[in-house]
Length: 397
Ligand SMILES: *Cc1c(COP(=O)(O)O)cnc(C)c1O
Image 1: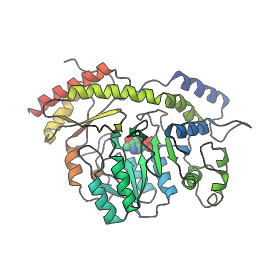
Image 2: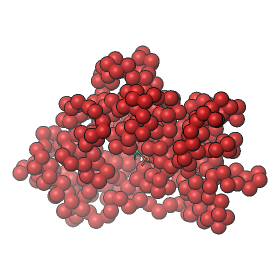
Image 3: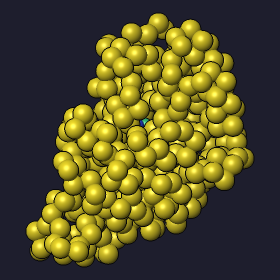
Image 4: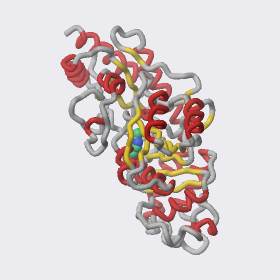
């Protein structure tokens, strides 16, 4: 079979409207979000307002990254030094990193075969640690049963902050992901769903939490300029006691994000078409399983995960090599050493965790490919066929 030749890290060009607006802002030189002419509203404030509307929430803060948004949400929530914060064992390293940066102690929760948080282990750990807060990562866009999750947290009096880096544009039972807890954090980094190189968005309906977050982000005394912030009087009790931990977004990034946000739902449909194309090719491949997606889950198929149950380390290495030779960039969550963006919780040595037996087993057999929108549905079918072929030949070794 012909090798695949496109790049797995090549995103689409930005919309022409993004480029035009960014050029205007570069021409006027007012890149800082608080650098406005009398009567002018900054691009960053408008983005916040548009994203709050998109999510159907009251408040939004644009900031430097999703990692920064998570740290800020945790601080604005008011976590205390050393406080246990529950989070997914299977996630990206900025998630435990944000808990650490906010002074919390990550407590890792097991993963299910559907690649979501294990709710039984969550309950055990809520009981065992009396944690007040779960930072839930919808890792690779897999959404846990949110009805069951919210019920468990409610019963234990614990709050929820959502990491929506892979779920911007997603929903559970028609309710937007990012509206189930006290706050939600989104990424606009190049490999997520809208692209400004780096960037983050923090949303909430809690006026005090947002006031603290805006102060933390480095608003100085200019918070009154925010369109998607709480009333000025909300700031009166916290404005002098909340540190400035500079991490704002700038107008240039906001300008290139706004047209992309307007296109987001269309892009989500394109991702789904590509995801289904890979899924069709991999369904029924001997020795390989795809992840069943619940019907309540409206997901963004910006990456594809599959499992090769019982694969040995040497077969996995052979499989990765063969995929690479066929031009398919497959990542493996079972590798002993962290590679590129992919790591396993056991390589976060600052997190004190006992081995998590079921997560270890699941990640050992788990593989992952990106789906940039520069791939056509036919490209995705081609990729699916190549993965199937490489799986067959490496499993017979
Ligand atoms: C990328 C990512 C983040 C962090 O986003 P940044 O904007 O790069 O800080 C957080 N969580 C997950 C699951 C991610 O993939």
